[in-house]
Image (cartoon, rainbow, N blue to C red):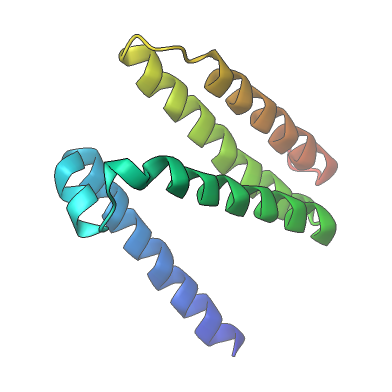
Length: 117
């Protein structure tokens, strides 16, 4: 069962990588391929943030520093990427930059606690 879970998780990651590549190359095509609609994106983001909060809480409850570090490195990337996008569009970006920095601090603390930093 564990092997199957690992294989399917790998396929899931590969599928997400394909979707992200489509979005990065052609936003309109990415929206079409994923059946997203601009009008519902604020609602969709609410679900995404709820999921991210659940992942952070579950990682904290699990207590594995490597898991926490990996998750918060991803969160740092998301914050920094959003800040970069908004800065490029000359929009307010500081909340995203601050979120990226805060996530990076958590990741570094977890790495240090794990003996990896």
